[in-house]
Amino acid sequence: LIPHDQLAPDTLQSLIEEFINREGTDSGEQEFKKNKGITSQAQLAEGNIVISYDEHSETCTLLPHWQAVEFEQEQSQDE
Image (cartoon, rainbow, N blue to C red):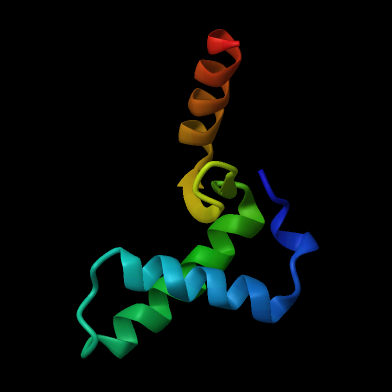
């Protein structure tokens, strides 16, 4: 997991925008995307979502905190 407060503001904003675009919103829905970006920032600050880095694909994504914890538990059981 990557602490959101350790990323440069521009990097964090780019990550959030990439996540929103990847989630399939229409390009014409700019207001929706803007609101979703603000919501994502608030959710990160509250700890409800986290930034997860996948070493195999070398990509980051936003996940609900519970899902990240569940994934980490599965990984530790596999070791």
